[in-house]
Amino acid sequence: MAEIKDPENTILIELSGGMVTIELMPDVAPQHSARMKELARDGSYDGVVFHRVIDGFMAQTGDVAHGKEGGNLRAAGTGGSDKPDLPAEFSKLPHDRGTLGAARSQNPNSANSQFFINFSDNHFLNGQYTVYGRVIDGMDHVDAITMGEPPATPDTMISVKVAADA
Image 1 (cartoon, rainbow, N blue to C red):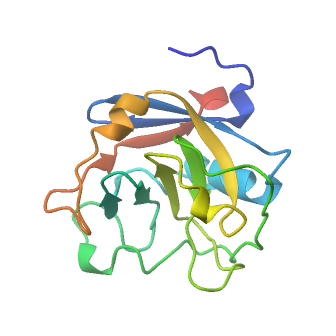
Image 2: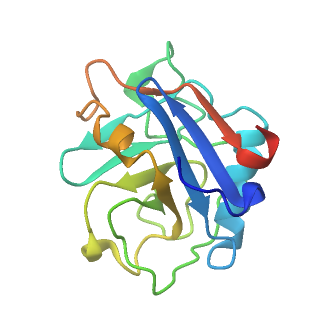
């Protein structure tokens, strides 16, 4: 397990295969980092599926409105949370393997609760999607997430917690 330097800005995602540790970047994307912590703390992400997983590209999840396991997963990917959308927080950080990006519609200021984890360096996304975290441990568990758009039997975020609260 990687050393957690800042528990208040570290997210722990429990998958069936094991724990994924994400270091948030509040200095780069303060609003996106705060939103992820807020949704983790209120349990919104618990039980949400990975609804879009493309081999060699990324794994997307976080639709707290439509992505709960056991719900109508055909709508997964179309919703967010009951919180307002976030303005883009673009930076010079590249979309490297293991980085966390804010999913959104065509509108750059429409990110809400959905996010994706890059399987590979996806530099064509640079400057178009907010980067606000990186996997520091458990990328092998991310690599094992079931592929599909949507996957026939999607993997679920069993629990999502801020490390300071765990």
